[in-house]
Image 1 (cartoon, rainbow, N blue to C red):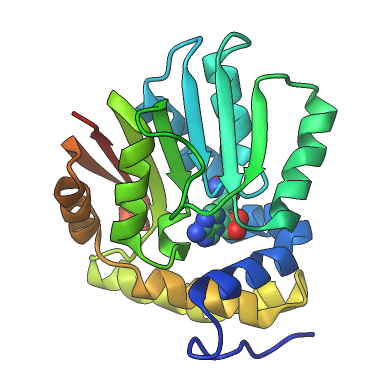
Image 2 (image 1 turned 45 degrees about the vertical axis):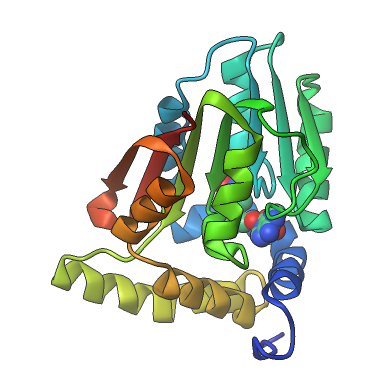
Length: 242
Ligand SMILES: C[S@@+](CC[C@H](N)C(=O)[O-])C[C@H]1O[C@@H](n2cnc3c(N)ncnc32)[C@H](O)[C@@H]1O
């Protein structure tokens, strides 16, 4: 079992994140279910509703992981639409690819790419989603400006992210859960405590929802909104590229 992760000085955040997700890819979906007590389905549904996607549109799912959001987006845009989904981790992408092979959908394409340097021209996508991704990128503001670049004028960005609640008693219970339950599940199921220790730290170090909303505004998105779900444990941010 792996108990310690290398210090952030030793490896870049991108390498660290890639190593972490490669190492937990096989157990990612089941642990996600356990850690959120199944609530992630409802959070994902909220995200998909916020996209306001229509049949036939082109959407980019950034930090797609094993493709949970990607498959819902594909259903929303239909056979005449298309979803392109990118991630840094080859192992997460290979799980997504094997799910795709079973579903036999022809409107999804998975690509290995970095959210900070997307291999697409500007003004390409009608909509862009990023679920549990902003917390993992090396620089949130740079990532947002890269995401802004590839969205068409009038197109929408929707982000779903874990965050820290502000109500004191909920914050305390949640911090306890992050410090104890999350690494415990990581050690028992993924046999990888450090990956889930990283998860715990990444949530606790993530900027507040208000700061993220400010970053959306600063990047140039308009009509920006923030919805807090589950007592503020989850935040959904959205904005439009003018
Ligand atoms: C917590 S998972 C979320 C996966 C998926 N969106 C979901 O809802 O389950 C975060 C994903 O972001 C990916 N990731 C982290 N940094 C990235 C980057 N700079 N570019 C692309 N993908 C990245 C990781 O490899 C990982 O698969």
